[in-house]
Length: 274
Image (tube, rainbow, N blue to C red; front, side, top):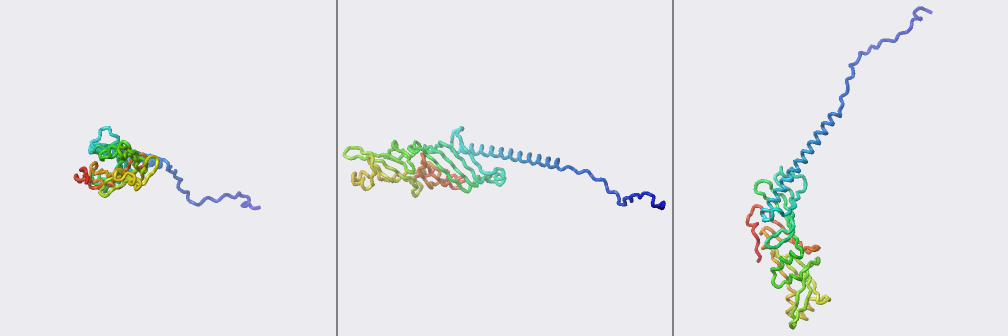
C-alpha cells in the first residue's frame, strides 16, 4: 500500500458563497389589531353620530307637530324614520317619516292619527312629494262626529265590523217600534263618509227594505236613508278622504295629503262642506 493511500480522505470545502443571515419576520397581528381597533372606533363614532342625529330630528318633529296642531306640551308623539338617517340628511331630504299620536283633537273631534310623509326636505322650504294619513275613531269618538247629524240616534250607535249599527224608532199609531240598522261606510264623491243601510232587523227577525215600506209606508224612509257625514270641515283643504271601513272596534279613514301642503298656506286651511 502506498503512502498516499494511507492518508484519510478529507471532505471538499463548500464553494457556495455564504448567504445573508435570515431576517426576523415581522409579526402581522399588531397591525391587524390596530386596524380592528380603528374600525371599531369608527363604527362606534358612526352609531353615536347616528343616534344623536336621530334624537335631534325626532325632537324637532315632535315640537313642530305640537306647535302646528296646538297640542299639549306633554302629548305623546311617536316618530319613526326607517333606514340610516345621516345619509338622508346629507342628501337634503328624509325618504320616509311617520308620525303617530293617539287622541288628537281636530275641530272638536278626537281620533288616533298616523301620517306618513315621503321625501321631506330638511332644508329650505320643507317640501315633500306627498303623504298619506289614517284617522281611527272608537265608538265614543264616532258618536261625537255623528252628533252633528240631525235625527241620528248616536246613543244607540255601535261598531260591528264591517258595519256601523244603530237602532231607530219608527212611529206607528203613536207607538215607537225599534228597527235595527246595519250601515256600511263608504266614500262619496266630494270626500264625505256615507253610511248606507245594508241590513235591517225588526224585533228578532231580519226584514227587507221593501217589507219595511209595505208595513210602515213612507215612515220607513227615516230608516232606509243614507247618512252623509262631511269630514272636510275638520281637516285641511289639502287632505282628501280616499277610503273608510270599520276594522275591529274602530272606524278607520284613509286620506291622501297634497305634498304642497307644506308650502301652500291655502291647503292648510280647513276645508268646507258642500
